[in-house]
Length: 176
Image (cartoon, rainbow, N blue to C red; front, side):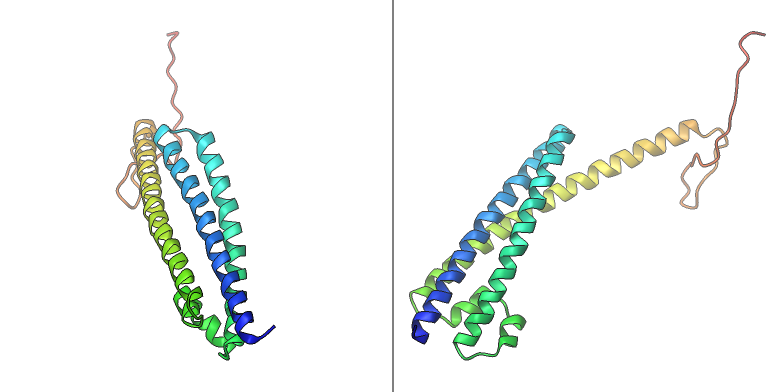
């Protein structure tokens, strides 16, 4: 195989990995949206299913990313660049710059599509994180209110909140 064919084959492999990354990130995005829907409905089973799916997608993405970095190392070697350069600058645009047209254009287009998917995923993840933080804050506030109602001693913690650390046992004799 001549070097040009080898570089083209590596470029094709890189493009294929990017397409797989786009697909997996799409699955992750779908799972994050399901997580958001589960939070909105307070459906713990749906949340659990979506988190499990997210984990599966993240693990698959990590494997694809490992393969992508290996392809970049091979591409750097095939084009006469140092392997260290591939690990220091493992971007799709850097790799595309080592390819000739039309492979360069295809890899750049796939990279742009992946970036678009990542931006959408980041936005949805941020919404889910904010919703989860809001729910956690509401739960904490409810627990504080319950602690205030149950605290006979009315003691305060260092933050000035009523705390029910020491349990005061009281009884009422209703027979007398």
